[in-house]
Length: 241
Length: 320
Ligand SMILES: Nc1ncnc2c1ncn2[C@@H]1O[C@H](COP(=O)(O)OP(=O)(O)OP(=O)(O)O)[C@@H](O)[C@H]1O
Ligand SMILES: [Mg+2]
Image (cartoon, each protein chain N blue to C red):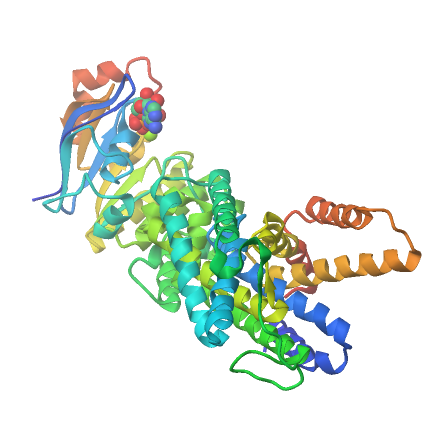
């Protein structure tokens, strides 16, 4: 059964077709990749799923329920957590307080939210930095913080927008291990946008490819990297395959 | 006990004992400091915690003052019922302003302008409201002032000092509690990045309205105090934008978003304003506007050298 069902959604910005008639689904318990060259419409697709933009056409179902008219906070409460490609830490708050904000969605009391947040920070290797102001973190740590905050809302579906960008290969592998564990032990379904092919190939069981706002291929990682249309659109692009 | 709570206990003891060390004039200055500490704390809930800049907080002082003042003036009803009416009216007014702004995504400077506009509209409204005396003002009966009449909030300066002390301490405790609760975290998240806050499941519209409602209700109580302390109310004065600015200067100088900022800022500014007046009188300078110039220069210096306010810098020094 699919947890997320995206049905021919489109989003236009003025004359620009950012996303056009895109359909795909994400199986419950699955890990799906969403790839494509710069400007392909990946983040815009995320923003529609997360409720930032209402799609111009089409619909989005989450666990069978239409969510494309809901606000971002309602979608988060329904069980979809997201990270921002351009990180958005609460700069004036400590790392722990940042994650507590997320944890308060499921834990009303500060003590419980704090405990839950601390546990998540340990899991992402940010435990030692919990009392630092978020503004002092390096970019890779800010990406981890994005993930930690989203996880604190206990999502059934986690949307990751280029969280591996800028990580060193060993750090990238650690992050991959975290997501594997999350998927295996907690059953969290993951949809990830990623340019780092090393991570996509290691994690994703299914990949969808966007190009100029259109879906041009879907399949297993092996199928997708051999697809002529995919090779075509990446030609001349600097790929990290 | 931590250094912070020891310092707090000492401060509380000093404040309770203070009237016995001060003369009547100094006591009125101390009452004024507490008044601005209180209103600053109330404003801070909206701006310092939730990041919503109000430049029209005088509207809540004014509506609160007129609400309780009118009940007393027309029906002889004391401020205990008056304060409930004042809070209800101010919460309603705050919710209207907040609803309009947040529903139609008016934020930042435009939100601040809206708050000024509401204060101005309300002032004009009261100017035309004969029931409250119009522009000629409303005067509350001043009774004999040496016994404590708590039911009608009539008494000696000491009573007003302790009332203001209780309010300021209560506001401090309330804000400390709010800041550590879910509301405080949500407000700060909204202040830092509203889009990220929303993505974490926060209904930012509702939580911003809550901040406005609490801030308005707190400020309304200050208005009731104002009415019964000064006993005369004029729309021109009470709703004037300079009154709104007066409220925000304390927290701005002391440290926006901090608990001690409003208290410290109110103390520094009130003493400063008073000190300049006295110093100029002693020197015998009578140049018009010279006081405002001094005051302005000090404000400028604080803003330039301590852009986050005095408290954050002081707290670091004291290692609190
Ligand atoms: N808010 C917006 N207003 C106008 N145009 C936008 C907006 N957001 C995105 N776009 C445009 O839509 C297109 C798709 O952008 P999108 O961010 O979805 O791409 P992407 O696949 O995430 O790219 P990248 O890999 O660079 O992150 C781009 O041409 C972009 O400039
Ligand atoms: Mg993107």
